[in-house]
Length: 509
Image (cartoon, rainbow, N blue to C red):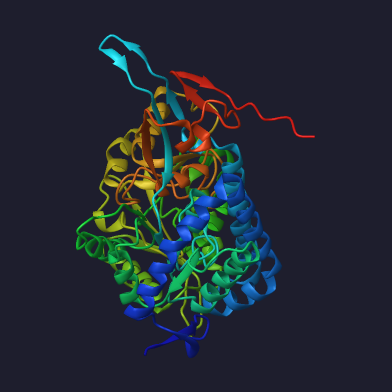
């Protein structure tokens, strides 16, 4: 029996908890409970699950003080940031509540029986249905919004899938408290055990995705963790879908007119973006392309001043701290020079110094284009915008790419640059910064490998698509069809005989 410990990243102090790592017998029990809970979620229907998500959001907010009190000493992220993140977590559940009420996510389509050029065509009806119980791996850097109470959990429950979360070892007490809040909301609605469950320990996480009851998995984490999970899934006789959000350097390009016109403003926003939350955001800009001209010089000098006067950044755990130091050293060995580094006193915790390094084009070694998770930014100086045509393809595809333009830069050259950035990212940001991902219907948080291993988003309304699969009914009697596919049902948008039909909401008195 292995006791789960918690570590304060500010001091490095470790202490045991009352939690224990999940053994095989307990994991089997949890998986069986999740399988049985799938029927309850299905019987709730869309609107019943919408009510459940609302109740979960309320439960999280009602326990705000308790949850933040658990997370602050486990993450070092600070109460203001955690308070904001808990608000985001509750908002994600409420957004998926709205997705369920809208109903368009099921992609209902009806083709009535009719004569076709190939003969009589059968009646075919199709919609998306839940995968079944899914595994969610909590992220270290978002103890609420990408962990037990995160967007993956919200999307999966909305889809009708019970969730078993593998708690991240950086915040086990926060994970336990979050699961307790969600579980309380489920019980208040008469729900069973298994709608939301949690396991602890690396081996339990790998055993979880091997279990036949689990029908899908999602991770926000490292490429190494993703490969270990995928290897475990590959051992199954029936591999399951696995959605991983992984590594991203998120290049940001400052064009000459932007640097000349608002260099100090860009320096301020860029500094906040690459150092916020200790630089431990998946959308943190890791590479900034800045012109080698007077405007660019002023921008970089403003960045240097902000970095030099910055305080230390507390990283989430020892592994993150050690990886940051190793990557920073590798970047220096690759030829980039440190132009500014915060002065941080040595201590026992996992505090590091925000760092600015510089290099120039032509030439961009691969060692400078790898993600450095933490408060480090590589500034790449260029002389001509045309140089970026060769430099940007050397940057690994990312979740985001950003471009800052100024007056007179609405040119074919810039259009080509934006097309290049769009081909290698999932979101292009104009005159802004990639951190602070909006939770909305139009959001896409994903990108080509190695930023993710999927075309699906992990943030926004369409994140629900990961936990659904299509099912068609052919010549089925009306009584057995889901209500969304019955002829008389008009509460959601549908495509009927090839024509889009908007929802016709019933009159309620």
